[in-house]
Length: 152
Image (tube, rainbow, N blue to C red; front, side):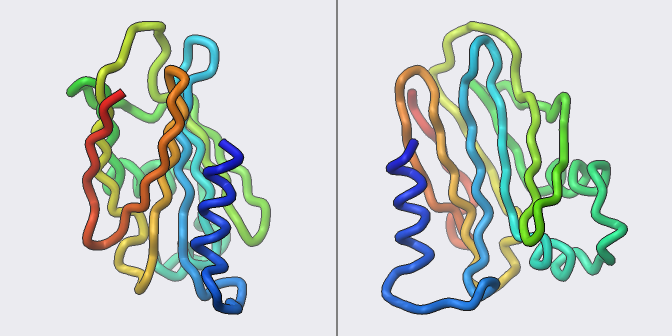
């Protein structure tokens, strides 16, 4: 997992000096802990508010859930996941969202992700990090790459 963080940092700092909001990314981590498969998402608060034409008081768990349900689809072996037991924490300038995707110990052969989260922002990337079954993989999704299928 540390390599994933280093890769994301390298993408952000690839030879240029950036202001805080010049590089728009969101980091999605899907990992298995005990018998649960969890989603953790970190994104820039200001980018999200501006993109969705919201005031800061309108950034709520319910609003983020609606947006994610419209812009993120995760399936395990063809079975679409719902966002369960969701939480939202604001740590300015970022927002941390977490959800339970699945609660069981069954084997998973593949994951399909369709992701258009904040894709209309110029240069935005969604970094997807998978850590399951002893396998760690990272993917960059963007406007031109909105769907990935991962074999485990």
